[in-house]
Length: 364
Ligand code: NAD
Ligand code: LMR
Image (cartoon, protein in one colour):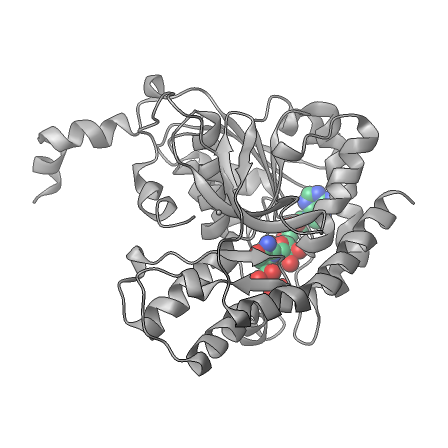
């Protein structure tokens, strides 16, 4: 069909409603590190999200250009750029969701933990400002090492008296995105139909994809499952090596970050059945933080028709239930294969030590 007939057909009403500001509540999203490799495409994707009414782009430098550029796109949100610490408060005031991709990325040969010395301080400072200017915002932590930066954020918020475990998320969506892509390729099933929970943390062996629960079901051999698991765990390194010193995943991360932020917005708006994997405060294992399915749903409330563009992908994901207050429910791990049980036990010491490192740093 031509663009014109699409625009005047009955279905175009639904499409246009997706961009009609009166259909959905006002929501402010702030991106901290918005001029970076992830920040820029993420700013673009959030500008395309009709659930966003105000988009605040903050970085220590170069934000005016990014903000001016993105602001010309004819979608719902008003865009503003903020540069330097003096403007951080204004960027954060009134934010419903704060996304943090601020900090340095890996180079070949580095682990995510090698970023700790620089990124821990950056995240600590940003979280102190969040506690001051938007203590009720949902915080989406992308900066690495996520296994430690989330515990740092929790400690900063505790000190400020603003900590709400329902509102703090480590973004592990890229692990899910990769697991789905790699599984679809191996199982020869349509990628858009694939669901794979990924639990644990976000570094090496702490990333535990549960291919035994993957759907559609496929008859993969043990060797194939082992190879898929390893590729998912090493997905970040695969990109770091391919970029050969020019950083880590940015485009796929922006996509994953946009999906997770969209889920948070849907949860805030009361959309039903919003379930994602995320690294959150948890009691499903003995570890204080753990990535698993969470639910962000609020039953019986307004269904948001806004984000048609992203909802296809969101509905393919499953594991924290999200609602008006952030996490509604941390879902259990479900039945694990022997291989996954072994992987779970192996990851615990590393994840525990990354958590402790973050807590210790924040309390120094
Ligand atoms: P980048 O260097 O391209 O961009 C980082 C941006 O952060 C820069 O624009 C920089 O100016 C900004 N910044 C630095 N200090 C800041 C501060 N105090 N306040 C605000 N902004 C600040 O890096 P990138 O490729 O965008 O990666 C950013 C982070 O995301 C890295 O730590 C990386 O490891 C991580 N990452 C996480 C995932 C994940 O799955 N969670 C995936 C990819 C990358
Ligand atoms: C990723 O998984 O791509 C990110 O954590 C970046 C990295 O350093 O691998």
